[in-house]
Structures are given as structure tokens and as C-alpha cells.
Length: 187
Image (cartoon, rainbow, N blue to C red; front, side, top):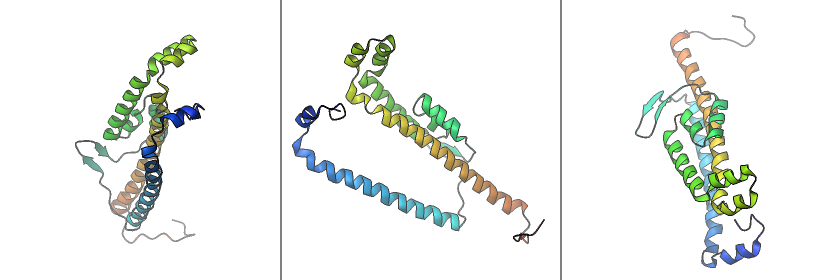
């Protein structure tokens, strides 16, 4: 927080030297593991697509009720812009929505964001800065923009999955087995 505000001397003063060498490997491992997991999941996705693997159309668990349905990504984005977690509720990711809402509430409470915004809107900028817990408030943009991104991307992917499943269903149930369409041929 101090380094973001340009107070490098204060940032150095609060840095715990005992843990400084732990930060770098943990950070590098997180980047590497995220990349490795993404590559693995992309490979699994391609294999499932090539095998024409079936996806469960309906599932109920203690955390979520999911059914395959078209979602409008812009609606998920708008809901996520109003209150973080509402976009995730729109796409039925209940556990993610609850955790995001809990983090948002914790950040808002600890940062005194509501009180700070009140003074800001009244034009009392020094009082707003005084009451605002800047260290906690710096977490808010991460949560806010993450939920917008997460809701939008998941709505797009759910819509693609719905389209694929619908195409497979129509092929299996309504397309004759001997139907072949050749390139350039008119039906």
C-alpha cells in the first residue's frame, strides 16, 4: 500500500526481512502453476471435443444447481458491475458468488468504504481520505474487476457449451443416419 502511494521509505520500514525470500518463490510458483494448469485443461478440453464427450445437462449439488442453458454474457457483466457476485449468481455459480460476496463485504467493512464514499460525495475530500482504510480499499478493484471478467467469460463458455450440446442432440435425434452433405452440393 505504501509503495502504491509513493512512500517507499515507509514500505521498506514495514517489510519483514524474515519473509522476503518466501515471497519470490511463492509468486513464481503461482505463475508457473497457473500456466501449467491452463495448458492441461486446454488439452483435456480438446480431447473431450474430439471424442464428442457428453456433458451433464443437469446437476444438483449442495453448492450449485446447474442446468445447461443459454446465458447472455452482457447480462452477467451488468449484474457483476452492480454488486460483485450477482453475475455469478446469474450463471448459477452459487459457491463462487457466496465467497465473492463474503470477500466484498469484508473489504467494504474493513476499508470504511461506505463512510469514505459518503464524505467524498459531500465534497469533504480530507475527511474521506482520513476515514478510508486505504490498505483494505486497494483490494476492492481486484475483486470488482475479477467478478466482471469471471461472470462474462463463464457466460460465454456456457453458451458455447449449450450450442454444442444442442447441435449434438439435434444430430442424434433428428438427422437421418445416412445423411451426408458434400461441399458445393445443394440440398
